Image 1 (cartoon, rainbow, N blue to C red):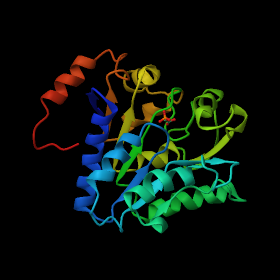
Image 2 (image 1 turned 90 degrees about the vertical axis):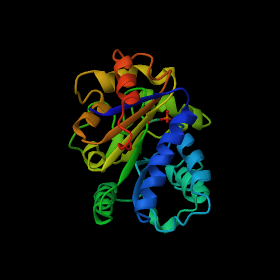
Image 3 (image 1 turned 60 degrees about the vertical axis):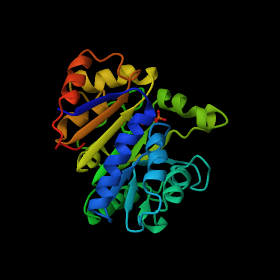
Length: 259
Ligand code: PGA
């Protein structure tokens, strides 16, 4: 079972995930991180800014989960720009070692294949950060995505476009397609860390953690992974039926066991 950790605030989650990432980089200075965009991972990046300050992170490699198709890579809301401004520059990573899918490639299918190949050549992702969409997506793997899917183009659901409209001047500007790591790609990462905050995620979290395994809720794919840590705040945990059990398990976690 995925480890489910319920914390009071997103900042607490940021500290836990930040510690796990800093420990990984301490053990492997050239570790491969899977980085995510959206509001959810921001407390992790905030934590890492101070936690990694002064440390040599020049060999750290990173792959983003996804990128919009149809907006310029220099658009402020492209994931290329966001990863650069929220991850690469603030954490001091080496820009050439941080990759984002090429949503502007003339041949998107080829770009997708090359992205999976680049992850493979890097030796695979050590730790993959994940958010969850209100429709249960991870990456941009929308409902119906195959658990075996590889990096490819997906059509964003109307709900995802509405959720992301807050980043754009109007919903009409939100792209309709994205290049995203597939669920099969994500499941190859050695450690998944899924985060969710706020009431708006409570239903998706309950379906992902306690519902039946279903392509309709792509985040249920995490149950196929042997090492997945889910960190949610009180509000995102509010619809979990077995909440007290998860709290009991965490409270009794052996001291030797890290995340
Ligand atoms: P959010 O998006 O972090 O902005 O809520 C999460 C996601 O869509 O995966």
